[in-house]
Length: 233
Image (cartoon, rainbow, N blue to C red; front, side, top):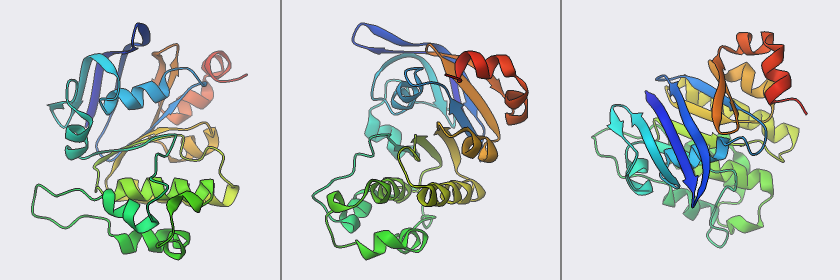
């Protein structure tokens, strides 16, 4: 379980997160909603140790605040940033290999390279080509699959469908559902409300660096004030 308590985050002197508290239960998907600039991406970076933070981030009872990003990844936390951050000059297969994590326990990983190619055949057809020549949608697939190669138990995904064609959006949604079915906990930052609410067990809304709503998708849909105040343009 991920348990965040009174989390503050900073970029230099800019105070971005103001006492964020939330949880992601084992095997659940939580959709984190909010307008651009609300602090959602900063929260993702805070979980991964990429920004200065105070407060508490407990993952399976282990404190993540103060740890280096590579230490957090070794705890089984995977991160797919909005910027994707693939290695454009390396091949697709080399990018996937870089995502592999040395297992600390004697068990087989849940995901193999063949699994990635089976889910996204376009990656298979490009496996020996530089990743930078692929389309944006294909690069998003690669970013997701590279993270899965680390066999995470918690996946933090920031805007995975932004700018993607409808067909690719459906594929990404199916992959997230498969992850959830295999017991992976997911914190999903997503602008497409229909996609997020259809998959999520719970949803949180962020505004001005704080959680302003935390409840079920049904409760969110019934709360017109929250939608109007914090999401609608």
